[in-house]
Structures are given as structure tokens and as C-alpha cells.
Length: 278
Image (cartoon, rainbow, N blue to C red):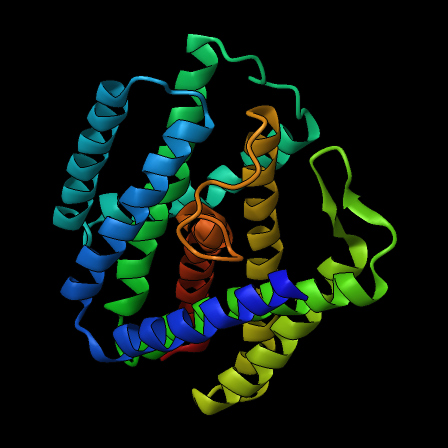
């Protein structure tokens, strides 16, 4: 109960701030805030994958900042969209990595380099996807909130469903705490958010049904993102990415699902817009 209380108190502080920023701030401000947060998450990632040198970790962070600058410059071009699509596709490869969980497990320089590249490919496209969703018209800020609510609801419903009914493990060799019941709870919470949120956003009929399907796919990939970080932590014998948030761990612990969900949702939402019109 103490851990649960910590999680709830931290969420009660962070959630209103995140919602207010998403709804009220322009996309440029969101880009800066997200770049700072995602950069801190990458910093935690470099520690998790075994990069010991502070200088090397700092150089990786500088290179990441330069990459985000390039993506901002290319955000409205085919290159920018290509990065988002590639980011969504990356999580299909992550599924293969999860099935071969011993891949790149040993702390060799080559494996550290592979994991550093994997972290960049996971984080940078998510940042680009966030800008595409938030800057989209109409109501891009509300669609951004919708996408994040899917992840937050999935995480919350998974936690309580897993505590209540969790017996069979989802991926015991990767994350013993995650259960099949928790995954079903996540998908159930997603449907609830998609129905209510989609209705409030004006989606009806076929458009709403397709949005629910997209929400389920997005949530499924968010679970993959969570499992992938768990795999890297297990390989590095690390419990949490950091200790920034009491009861929640570090920034990467809070954003792992978001990194996977945003590119998938951005690509899917663009496809739905083409299919159903504005």
C-alpha cells in the first residue's frame, strides 16, 4: 500500500501539469519541454545499457540534441514523416528482440553501441510524432492528450487488473511482475478511453470504430515498449531507470510506453484521416 500511495501521489502532482501543458502551450513550447524530458530519459538509458564514461554519455546526449534539431527543421517534410514511420516500424523489430532476449545481453562495446542506437531510434521518432500530433489541425492538442490518455489508462488498468487477477505471467523471463490479466486490463481501459474520448472529439460511426481499433493497436505497442525497457533493465541488472519520481522510478520508466505509442498513433491517425476525411 505504501508503494501504491507513492504512485498515486506522484500521479496526482504530475498529471495536471502534463495535461495543462499539452492543452495550453503551443507546439514549439511542447517541443522544448519534451526535448528536455526525452533527453533526460536518454541519459538514464545510457546508464542502463552500461555506458560508464560521463564524457561519452554527454557526447551521446549532445548528438541526440543535434538530431532533434534536425528533426524540428524537417518536421513538415517527407523526411520528418519518414522518421515517424520508421519509429513505428522499429517496434516490430523490438518484438523480435523480445523473443530473442539474450541478444546483445553481454556488456561488450559492440552491444552497448547497439543498445544506444536502439534507444535513439525509440526516443527520437516519438518526439517527432509528438510534434506531428500536437501541431496537427484541427485540435492537435486534444488529440495529443487523447493519445497520452490511452497510455495512462492502459498503465492504470493493467496495474489494478494485475493486482486483482494476475496469475499467469505475460513474459516471465523479461518482466515477472507483468501478467496476462494486466494486459487485458490495459486493453479494456483503452477501449473505455477511446469510446468516451473519441465521442467527445466528434468521432461517430465507422470513424469511431476505426479509432477504437487504432487505440487497441497503440496500447499493444505501448506494452511492447514497457517490456523492451524491462528487458534492457534485466540485462543490465537494474531495477529502475532512475529515482526521480517516488513510486514511479525514473523518466524512462514513465515514458517507455509513450515512446512506443506515439509513432504508432501518429501513423495510424494520419491513415484514418485519409480514410475517413477530416
